[in-house]
Image (cartoon, rainbow, N blue to C red; front, side, top):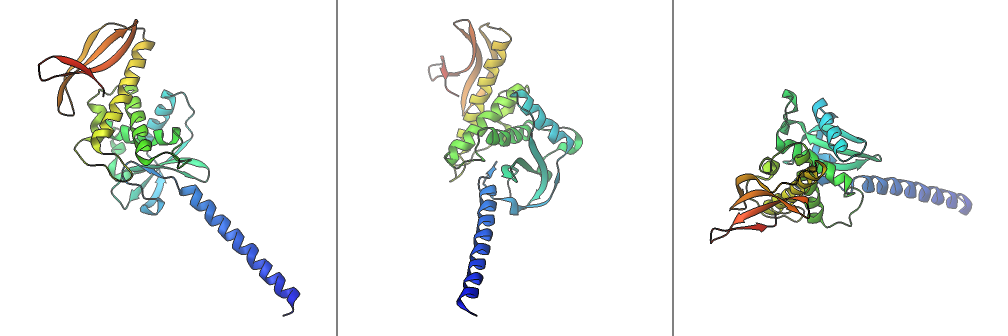
Length: 250
């Protein structure tokens, strides 16, 4: 083979290598930012992916409507081979939410607040652009999505206790996800934010106790609606050692 033909062959191989490398990089970029409700894994841990239940699509549509956007998420169901329940990710330029069909009760036409909260959490990842960029610290991403879940659950009429159902129990933080205590706190902040906004829209400002005997991280608390400059605000007041109640952060 003369030098001219050898050059053409080498040039051809370089073009092929560049094309394959470019496609691989594109695929890696497409699936890099996967936000899972628990530990992040990937599409390889999903088998038999298919259409979501109609109820799941309806729930996501309601969540989109609650924040004034068009529903453009692709919602699918699969059989997960790992112990996490749902994740949000980009694929082929579309925003996907995938859930484990065995862990959700859509089949009987109902859904628990825990199920709704998990789906809202994944919607929150997309709306906060967590699936587009890795610039957000891992724990910050999860708490922001939890805050959104609490906000949506309040819009759906869930009480403060029901909104925290998905984080029952105690577990420590991991490298990618905060501990249960911090996640409940984020949900409570989101819930309080939505509840306050609901009251403002209704032009309701009457100081009152909304709920009693609420336990917040081991403390006995009440949920209070206050009027500050004629604007309603919903807050927690927890009992101190001396028996008095004081306002506290969620």
